[in-house]
Structures are given as structure tokens and as C-alpha cells.
Length: 540
Image 1 (cartoon, rainbow, N blue to C red):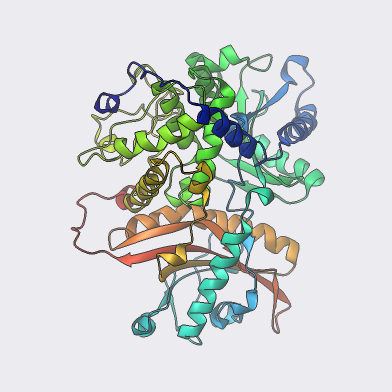
Image 2: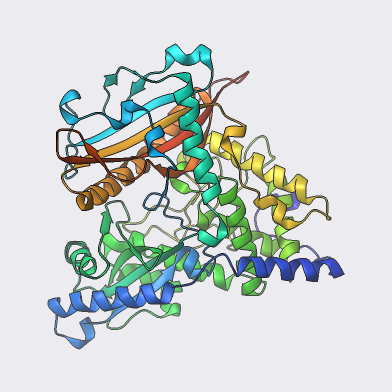
């Protein structure tokens, strides 16, 4: 196995298939075909129809009126498992009345002035507080904000309250997330001619879409995303403006020179689709074998709560690259063989004590020059790249590390879950379904950091939209808090937003209040030195 630690090499010899492999693979394929109801085509048709309405308002030239939407990410790979958009569609608490009165009974006038964050509502609150079932820690509970620093007395918060809240947070959420109820995540990249600029698109497209589907959220970021829900499907739309007279073909998209025909301010948006195409063309196994293994791995990561880029865990594209790599190393035709090999391979790969070698599926990582508007390719000789804890390199040029957000504690948790699954599957008689047993964070942690996000509005419809934008912003910055926490304690982020129930009326104000929480399990760090370098400084 040691020669596999240094990039793509000659594939291993695939062991002869055993009678058990056929039956186990068939059972695995049947299980994976039931995890998602595919409505991707309907969402793409809706996106294209709405985009045509926008283009018709801008230009009358036939060669400039084309639009084309392509699926990317999990749906582009045919490997959707559950709702990856944990920020927009969280599960509700089973009993909101169990949330402490500190959270539910406040009103705006009793709080210090907040630093306003345009264009968000001023009635936005962010709290971080401790929840602990240890009586000796009762007097140490403090509420404070990590974006807006202010202090609030922690009243009416007993040990019984803490224990009740923890169970309310977790027990309902863990048991309610099952395969049969998972929502589908659909990512789409929309191409238009250069006549439709990014500024025009993000100003005009969301209102047109909102008239059809209702609530639409625009998340400003390096890659701006339009989010909406359609027939139980969470849909993300990114935009690309290209100087072409017709929609791009697969051959054009795979050509690196195509990036120069894309407007500079939308170049970041195109590589999600190029990644899907690169993965598909570099697979030495049947595509349905790859998607079955990828779905199985994603389901394992979601059930064991080690999935989600915003929570500093590996993302879906990281797992896809890792699965594609083991398909190259062991090009077996039975999914069960590849699934067991996945945990064996990466348990050994991540066991290195000095530095984890990069995982990549291209023939080399040689840089071919910088493309304006895009980051430099990953190079282990650069200081910024040398500090990456888990280098998993995207196959679409420029080669960047898609796992650069993974922190120390998150990597340790991910590795622990990998080794646990490997120990289970090392016994060939162990059913594959064993690795999908849900993880219960209360079994391992009794003390938690809780980031509670709330907002107040005059009507419930506006409240939902503002809370979605506000919580999206907080979630996008959550990793900075996690990088800081891991310098002090062992932390395990819970990769799911927890809602505190339906909107509630604020007494004597005529306004409505609603909130959601992000949870981090924490333990005392024992016998470890503080790291000299930390991702916290880069995050800041």
C-alpha cells in the first residue's frame, strides 16, 4: 500500500469475485436506488424557462438569446443522497417550548445596540452559550456573541433546563433524518450569452423566479448562489456569462481555454460543472458502480455526521474525488468490493504522522499558467498549500484543494469515523448496512457550544426570508469560530442547522420571532500542545 501514497500509480490487481460479492453488490445497489427521488430535470426546465424570460427582455438578437442549464455537484454525478443545503432546510425541534426563556422571551428594546450589517434587518441577534449537564460547570455558563460582542446575564437556566434542551435539540433531529424522508439537492449552472452580465442576472432573475416558486434567497459570496425550493427539491443556481453564439458543448467545457471565454466575474462558477465532467471521463469502472459507491460513502458521512464543507468536514465533491481515486487504484466491477476498499485505503492514507499526501486523479498536478480571475494551482512548495491538513485536489484546472476548509478537530473526527467503519467492515461477514448506523452526539459529548441565530420581523413571510439570509451569513463564518475553538478544546461540529420551531409572537410588539441553532460538542484538550500554525489566522 505504501506506493499508493504518492499519486496515481499502476492499478492494483483486482481479486477474483466471490459468490458473496454478487449478492452483496445487488443488495447495495437496491438500497442506493431508493435514497432519492430524481426531480432534477424539472428544476432545470424551470430555470431555463425563467432565464429565457430574462434574456427576452435584454436582447432581440437570435445568437444572443440562448440559455442552457446543466446539473453539477451531486445531481450532476447522479449521486444525490440527502438535502446538502442544511442551512435552508433544517429539521424543527419537537417541542419549541423547551428552549430556555432566555431565548424565547426577549424583545428588541432590552438589548444593547448591535453593529448593523446592511442589507440585513437590524432586528438580528446572534448568541453563543454553553450547555452542560455537569453541575460543577453551572456557574460558568455565559452568553456572548462572536460577531457582535456583548454580554447578557444567563438567567432561568438550570441543569434540568440544559439536559432538556440537549435532548430536544438532538433526539428529534437525529431520528427524523431517515432515507425515506430525505430531500433532494439539485445544483445547476446556468449559461447565458455575454449580453447578460452577472450584475443584471442577480438583480433581475430572482424576482422572476420568485413569481413562480415563492421564496427565493440570493446568497452573496465569491460564487453567488440563488437558492429556492421546488417540489421538495432544494435547488442552487450559479450563473456563467460566456462569449459564445451557442451553448457550450462538453468538449468546449473540458478545454481549459474555454475559461478565457467566460466573463471574469463568473469564472469561479464554471468549475463545478467542469469537475463533474473531469470525474466522469477519468473513471476506469462502470459509471453506475462509481455512483453506487459514492452514494454509499455520502450516506455514511451524513449518518455519522462528518459531512459538510461549511462545518469544516469534507464536502460532496471531496468524497467524489476520493471515491474516484480508489476506483483508479482498484478498478473492481462490484460496488461492495470498492466500498470496503475505500475505508481500508483511506485509513492507511490518513494514518501518516508527518504530512498527508495529496489525493488526486489527474496524471499530474503540473501548473499550466495562471488564469485571470481564478486562484493559483495547488503547489506543495507554496506556504499556503503546505499548511493544508487534507489535500484533495480538484481535477478541473486550475487544480485547487477542495478540502482546504477542513480543520484539525474535524479531520480527527473524520479519521476516527473512517477507522471505525474499517474495523466494522474488516470482518467480511459484517453487513454493509452496519456503517450507516446514525451517530448520536449525546453519547460522546455532554458540553456544547451553541450558536443561536434569531431575527424579528413584522410578518412571518418576511421573517423566513430574512432568517434564511442571516443564518446563511452566520454559517459561512462558522468555520472561523471552529478554528479558534480547536486551539482550546477538542471540538466536534454537528453538521446540521436546528430550527427552534415555528415563528412566535413577541409580546406587546406585534412582531414575530424565529431562530435556529448551530451546535458544537466540546471536550477538554488533554496532553496536547498548542499548534504553532492554525487555520484560524487564515480564516480571519
